[in-house]
Amino acid sequence: MKYPKNYNCTQNELYAVCAQGWEVCNQNIAAFTAFKPKYNATFVQERKDEVGAVMRLADNFKRSAAQELLRLTLSNEANKCLTLWRKLKSYIEEAWPGDEQSAMLKSAGVSSYREAYKYRWEACMHLVTSAETFVLEHGTVLLAGNNMPESFTAAISEQQAAYKKAYDAFLDSLNKGSMLTRDKVEANNKLYKELNSMFSDARILFKGQETLLKQFSFKTMLNQISGPGTAGIKGFIAGLPEPVDMQPGLEMKLLESGKEAMLESDGAYRFSQVAAGAYTLQLKADGYQTLSIPVNVNTGSFTLLNVVMEPEKENN
Image: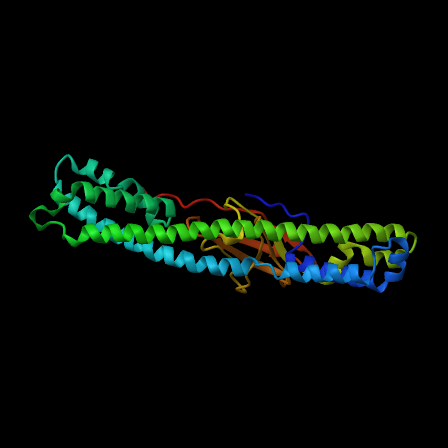
């Protein structure tokens, strides 16, 4: 689900502009109070405190770190599922060496194996569940002639339960991460709205005072913080499910410097303070084709580069 942000900058830049904006308001508090009594020291301090509170909400890196641990656990359990399924395949091939073999392998989940091997979690869930069901239904035939060990039935059932537990935990983290992303974006939008409301009042209050008015411009403050002459790369990543910043295995960096991008949940990214020159932008994520894109950075400007991720191609 997409949670649109109303501010055209990174979160950290937003927080810096808000902090600076409310400080400028505080420096002119007498004029603001005379214009609208709500602008008093308490009101301004509350806005500053609000900026700090929103900054402390779970950010991309904290959410990604927690989810990465769950993803690693899920990957380990998926590998165990794949190992057991390959053993089951061998047992099936020996138990049904004739025309029935293809149908039996299909019943055991062979159609999901290729996707499961790519760590497509739902496919792996289907694979191990199909395998468990197959073993329970055809155990007598599989055990005949000492083909399949008696312990395999319990092993596949235990692994199905272990994978399901890890899979459910991972899905739960995705759902919670989505809610945290929504809360963070909504809180950021509120900060932006409140600041611009104050800036609108400032334009009325200080009309004709051009020097003073420049202090109540979001764009001007953003340039002061980020630097209008700072070079870099920015754009959007398309083709990934949101929240994009929590995509398993997602990595976006410049190969020449190793510098990593700042990523937002909606797919916005930014490389700031990049020296002018030629670079190779590498972008990869689990289950998607790795991209290596040449890009030039010019002095004093941001290069706009939108990228589209494509799922990995199946090997025939």
